Image 1 (cartoon, helix red, strand yellow):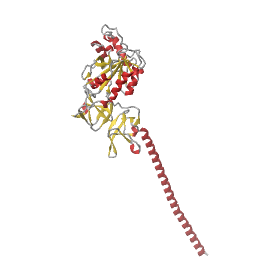
Image 2 (cartoon, rainbow, N blue to C red):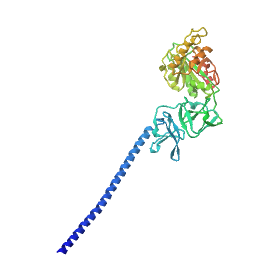
Image 3 (tube, one colour):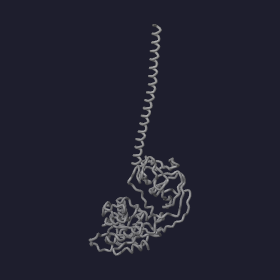
Image 4 (cartoon, one colour):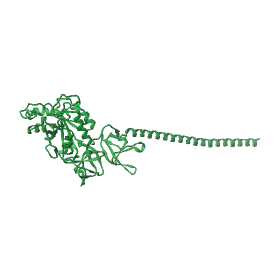
Length: 427
């Protein structure tokens, strides 16, 4: 009995051990399966998080992309060096940049390519903007000079504020030639570099025809169709203005602003042969010129007697406002000519008027003498008031090197047709 009981005990022990071993083996398999399931679950979670992150990045890329953007901070400029983006410079906050068109934005567009350049900027550092870059310089004729800059050079805007720095040299044609700066086209805009930061200059050929002189024309009052209340020789009909402006537009005549005229006089820019300055005097009915300027996309300058009409009456991106005094456009004050007071009133009275006019008109630098009458006395006061240029009559063209305080204009009379304008511009 004892032997039989021992055998039973051994068999039971072996059976229990086998069950235990099977349980352990089964547990190992279950553990491994659970681990695989857990790892697979983690992989799915990581993949999902990665996809969500990529989607968030893509949304941000798309929201920050536009054809025109503005930098949101001082940030880096890059070039694409075999797929790697290499830091080549720094651009300041709040600078406007034009970007190359991207039809289908993807995660590959984390760096935006700047228009007409080899430079890139991170999507993180810009935001879309409705601001625009002034492109009037594209109408200027380049100088026959090509410059190459040094390394690590600062570039400036037209107010000589720093805008960006580039580590590598740049070679470009000169568009504006100032005493201490060259103006060149870079990052789709006109920028300035100090002449001391230029390592080399080379003379190059130019084929474009440049203006040796430019006309400035002067209009007064435009009367709309049906209004025959003015028969004066300086009153203009809609038909006359429309025909003149249509001619200028059809012939691709570059219509200037006063600062460009001053730069031309100083020899700082070259202008195309077909260039003209359109001016309007006084302010009476001047708002009636605006629809024609906007229709033909022409620029003009209104010399406004600033006490007569509010400036906001003449708001248009095509109309510059300059000074015709604040309240000195009155005849009979002085004894000579038509008697404008600017030639005989006390210095303090004249200066107060001129400074008030400048302040009212956004500190304009351009002035026009009432009745075309001036003297050394009035010119000195105009200078002292802060104006950098002044216009008169004279019916001659503007040439480089003339006195910027005696800039001539051609008064346009009601009888002058398109042929007169054509002779001024194309003759």
